[in-house]
Image (cartoon, rainbow, N blue to C red; front, side):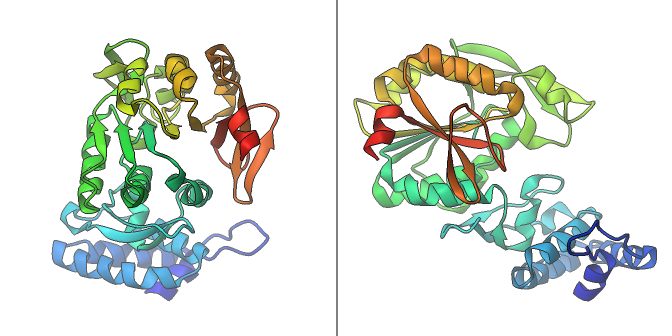
Length: 330
């Protein structure tokens, strides 16, 4: 079956993908429908997939994953899998979900999601006494933080406002026995209260407090009120000192979070890991400037950190920022 799917979705090296023979595509789809007919056959087949897929090249794995996505699998057949995060040494158990980015967990082996960020973090996480993750989603990064900080005795605080993503965050933490990670079903902003949160249908990772951002991903966007906590309250979690990392991935709301975090930036001078989309970079820079702490900018790339004069992501969406004096001290 593996050969059938590879032949059906073969991609030429150095040229545009060639159309797969229609007959083979139909045969692969028919096979997957047959395997998905019952929970038992689906579990057996997907279990075999998770054993075989790690031996394939990245291209072959992607082809197989694309083929699996053409079929609706019984929810009960989607079982937790062990995966390695990028090329880091961290191995975690995660639950796959159909139609979401974490469906790739089904293949086991290595999860290629934001590989360069995991590789960068693997070398740094143990340096921190506390990590605050704002926009934890289903907890893939949270699991890495929890595992590494458990080894060093540090603290992890994870914030996620979306109810479905938050439930999956808790599930993934439970699968990895990460009981010391403290989680909050809330967003972080300026002032404490309720605010509308916008969720594009079929895009769990792209829910946002910015309505226009959410509408980029689906014509159907649901709105619900979520709790927002004042960012200045985070100082009570951090206590008096120690080295801090703040990770922010809030789908277009980064500048507002940085503005709200200004007291924390001044008191604790944390390192920052930010998602930086081009259309929001200037606003994030302005918010950092107004906070009164000078930061050095680095794009996170597959080749490591790339120093930047202006805040700009390269080969990805993430940037690492450290207070200027701390960067100069190494």
